[in-house]
Length: 376
Image (cartoon, rainbow, N blue to C red; front, side, top):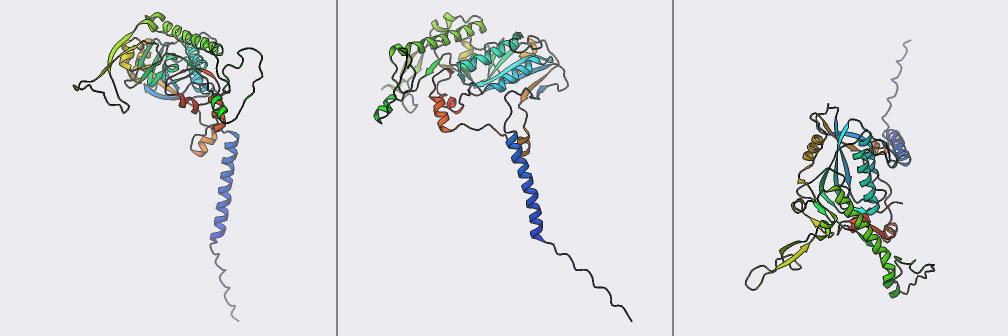
């Protein structure tokens, strides 16, 4: 009797739904790992000294280095940590023989500007005030798009100061911003009762009109900060004495413009001119050409030229210029994007803007200061 052939085993059908389920599980696992990483390492710790060194120009195999330290943005407490870490790294590196401080800043608070200024002096002289470095290093300041007010202030430790052809600089002055909402509160029936001890203790409160007696302490602080600004310039710019900064008058005739920016002309068609009188420390900005004529900078040059000046000051012929980058966190590596700290809320920004402070800040950049709130 012939045995019938065994039937072929049934073909396994491709189950599309099952495949999707497996892929979904894998995808969820990856997303969960990313979420945990972001939660654990959301931002770069402020106390981290680990910076990534990047070759900028020169011989990549050279041992001697010129470090390019970037000082950027509004200088406020909490926003200068990266600049200070760069300065510390360059100071401690025995292979760094000179430093270029690349400035692109409209300034900021008086205290933050002073912190950066002192750190550059410490690096230049190896004072050991914060951390012992590897010896004194010549410093060259290279000004980018803007280096004014506090941005100019932090350039003063440099032996040589150069500016890009498009740079805005100067703005030597100080102000205190004291917001006042007393009129708005009165119009809307809001009253703030102040219980105080001391005649001028309420001076600077946003709910209280500033009396002449209350204004004077703030004026004294502004004058003291202005005096400090002039002292720093006189120390950093040979020949620019405090007297010259405020007493040397710069007079010139300039065209008169209407509200739309058009030159106003007389009936005979000739431009109407105005006599303008300025001085170096009047709080206004200058073009690079004007700044060079006034002795505020040494020359008009770009960053590579500044690197060469720093190398020459250190006596280097074979060298490489390096910059520093923040290290990427695991969350940034996984997500492929920069993960920043939590942005302050609108209420926090408003409260920060309403806090009275002294500013080395270029006129017109108040909104930038509001976008970069001061950290405690």
